[in-house]
Image (cartoon, rainbow, N blue to C red; front, side, top):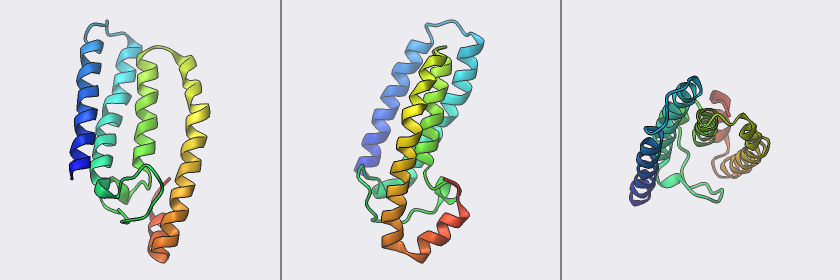
Length: 137
């Protein structure tokens, strides 16, 4: 639980600093669209991280098969909502050329998710395969 609280604290500090910066800027259509994507994605990213709990690790390892909450529908919600958050921030910043980040980010996330899937399949076998069939990415 200590790691979850540290992660939450870091994310909340980031959110407060970002809100302070954003409040100084005019609300253009790009800002509104970007925030409409980034804010829910950020909140869902926090929820996904909290739901993952102690199963979170930087390196692919299989301590627990988390299948509740957001993980009941999406195998990798941290990747999905992280990418949406980044897209929202890029749109908010009105710098569409930064979307090129996804040329690097998406293949890396796919590669990492495949490595994690392999580790989980080795550890949990049929239970993971059944879970995988019920979920997206």
